[in-house]
Amino acid sequence: MHLSEDDTRLFYKIFFRILDYVNEKKQVVPELGKMYGATELDPNLVAKVAQCLWENDSLIDSFLQESSDLDEEEAEILRGWKKHITGDFFIERHLKSGSAFIGENDQVFMVSGISEDLEEDFWGVDLPVLVTSTLIPFKGVIITDGLNARKNVFFGGGVKSMLKETYLKAKSEGRIIKSLDSDPENSSRAAARQKNTNGASARRAGKKKAAYTLKIYPRGRGREVYRVMNISPNSTLADLAESILAAFGFQQTYLFEFCMDNKAYSRNWSACIESESKDIHKKISTLNLSVGQKFLFHKDFADDWQFQITVQKIIEGEDVTYGVIKAKGEIEENLDYDYFDEW
Image 1 (cartoon, rainbow, N blue to C red):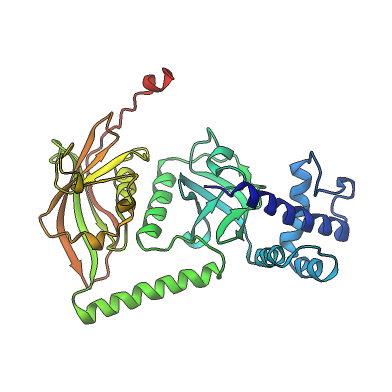
Image 2 (spheres, rainbow, N blue to C red):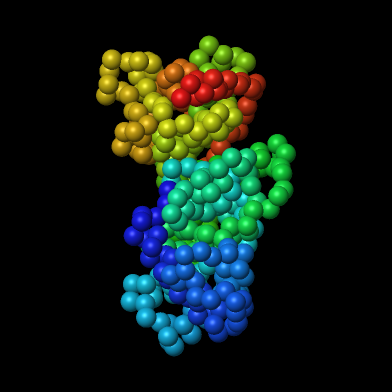
């Protein structure tokens, strides 16, 4: 995910205007000259001025008071940048909705690119990757200032597994931060309070569903390879697909379907929920699942991976741990790269 062309131009207009002001005011890199309107810039020099800005964000107020020719919308966007977060982040995965940045205290941010997806900026780089970045709000989404500094650190399987678990846990608990319109720390605390409140209400009511326990395995291999996971009622089918693929170590794909009648290639089209369907964003709680019910996750029709899903338990009114709670065996996806070489 990235900004539109108009919003990309708007971002760079605001960003370079404030950087020009900072550089003139603080003489960070005097030889740099005006950045706004320049046809070529050294990103290392720009990064020095940006660092000065983020360390002295009161300069935003000075700029708006003294010499800003920004209109009200542009000024409001710039004011929002005082909520920036600068630090080291792990980029754990790239998705259609953005890239998952994991920061301090296991906070997970969904970050959009500017002129292109962040996946393009890090093309060919194995994830996770550690970067120093500044996250800023822009018209309801989170972006970086475009000056991401990658650290040449490589990670083993233990760190990768830990980060994946951190992401999946934040996702299942609804703690992924998609906006900096409010303070992220307060947002996380509010989410935690909401989770506790919901749990207390569920215990009082005795009927609120806290999780669905699902057993999932590749068809024909249920004795040797399976995963048991707790999924939140507020998760969507798209979330479930992502969790299943991650649990088995498969690559994420945009081509899959759920067969609610438990039949692959079913003629009952109403029972098939495909990845491109709007119904893929239905919450699990709306599916009226029952204990013992079986349905199918069908991934990547060319490879024809079929995962059997069985509802083992519906947990009500308890504090639960979301994600994989039991696992047995491993399987390999066996991607056929020769197929791609033909293109």
